[in-house]
Amino acid sequence: MVSTRGRRTRRFGVLGGLLFVGATVVATSVPANAYFVDTPEHVAVKLAAAVEAGTTVGGATSSTAGQGYIASGTVVGASLGRDGYSVSAPKVTSSSTDTGAFANDSTAPVQWPFATTSPISSGFGSRQVANCSFCSTFHEGLDFTPGAGTPIQIIADGTVSKVEQGGGALGYNVWIDHTINGVPVTSVYAHMVAGSIKVTLGEKVKVGQQVGNVGSTGNSTGAHLHFEIHLNGVPVDPYPWLVANAGA
Image (cartoon, rainbow, N blue to C red; front, side, top):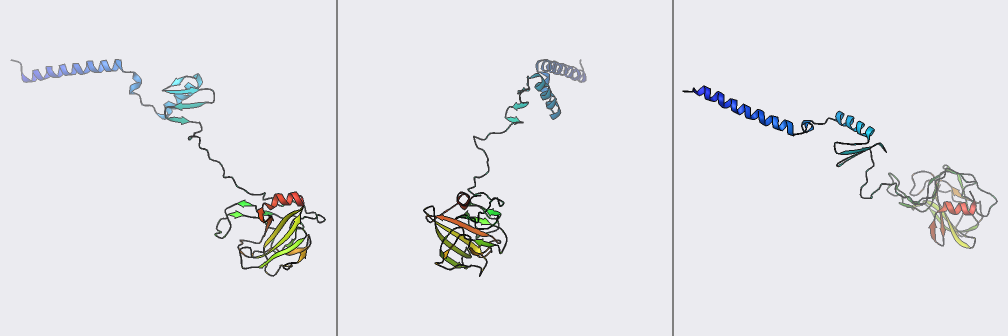
């Protein structure tokens, strides 16, 4: 009679043999790289070799032209396209914020609002002014910043059509009507120092005559001249208009 222990030993021996045979079959039929897990270092080595050889590695195509690497679902070292969408700086409608590149001709029939050059801090057009809830989002003129108290001159012969002594957005301001090259033109001078206005309503004025002084009255964040040009009652960019009529 065969003992129970003997039967168990033979049974385990048969089972072990079957497991060994199965493992051998799997080991010889499955590629060795099926058991290998790439590390970042190994991928880098393979990629470098592929770039050198211009071959395909691990399902990724490499080329020495451009040194790009493209894998399934992944793009490395290349710009990404998003359905044709692109990001660019917003377009701003504004005249030049020149730092003072104009030379006034004191003998010309049309002149700049200052006898000498002046910085321009804000141009004509769309704008956003930080921390200024009352500032306009569409600026209808130029802001000159020659310094508080600087004398402001009239740009051409004309007639004073409006004088406002503060109380509004433009503070102390003057409007003057002209006819220049046969076109009705209105010039506006705003934010002047309180009490500095030197003309009166209906007065005939001359080019180069002082209209007031640079101030910060009305809706203003600092001393400057807000200057406007209206053609047939419509505000236009004063900068190219001044360059064309008064020179630069």
